[in-house]
Length: 76
Image 1: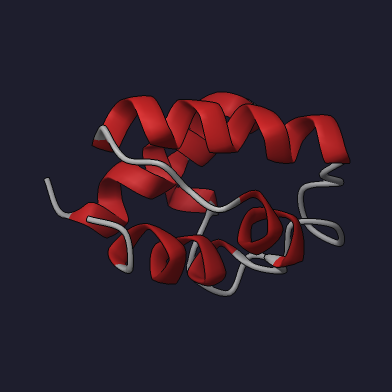
Image 2: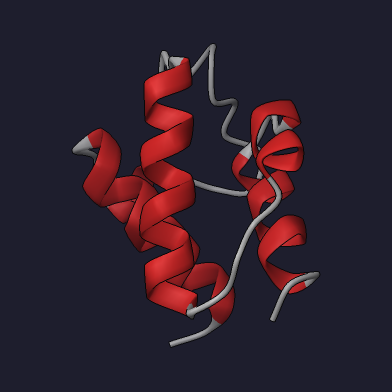
């Protein structure tokens, strides 16, 4: 499974969606109605999944799933 697939699976789990509904362009607020607590949960789950530490400021600035790919890729 690629990094992108793993990130999408995390989003699918957190937001209770099918992975096929999500893409790099999925907007966290418009499409998933993400709140700050969702962002903290995503940070924790992604850190656990990839065994990395993600910068909170980067996580809170993310607008799309693609932004999260970039953050994760920059930290693995």
